[in-house]
Length: 148
Image (cartoon, rainbow, N blue to C red; front, side):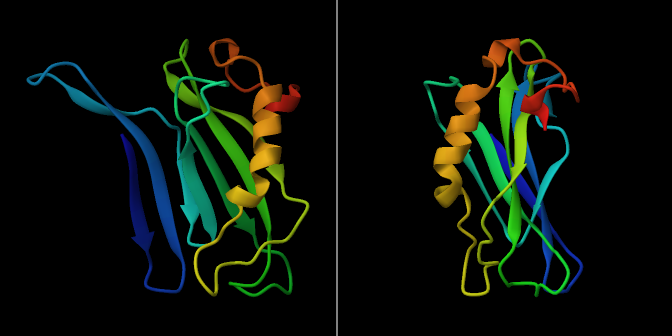
């Protein structure tokens, strides 16, 4: 189950924690487990769960969150960090497959929702194709390009 919880300090920004939850055990001794590490997005972000069966049988979490540089306004155009999270069967958890900064600045959502993932879809799919098979993913290795 994909789950989100939103936090607000009362200002114009929010932080949304993302979780992929699974119930383990039985009705008496069961528990809910989050299969993601800490993953969050701000109100100036885009996130989705994609089904891409040619890459993995599991849903893929993709997100794009803004980088706030000098002389940019809250809802102005920004570069975004895009990353994808794949389920690793061996680790029984989601792991980050890659992360990159967009080459283009996108609107920060002043007129409505942010739409980065749709515009970056081809690049994201290309990078997903270049990752190792999901069953071969291991813990992040700083020397491996797929973890940058």
